[in-house]
Image 1 (cartoon, rainbow, N blue to C red):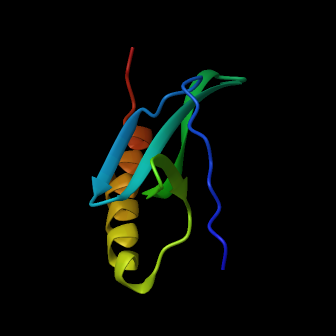
Image 2: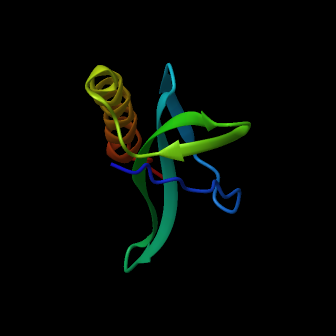
Length: 91
């Protein structure tokens, strides 16, 4: 199975990153407009960092030994997003 590499963009840097070894989950915040005003929603991207010759690349493919790390960083990201999106600021 071929590995898929993606380039990282600094246009929208992650709000928070959780990393275990070479596996990381990045949380991205996006502000959207609603009838009640702007709200922030978050999305999570999980990836693994690896080197191909001298070039650093990222993939969303994990082998059996890396799956526990992927699950754990996703759990940490889930907790962060739940806390961030559950918080209500009263004016």
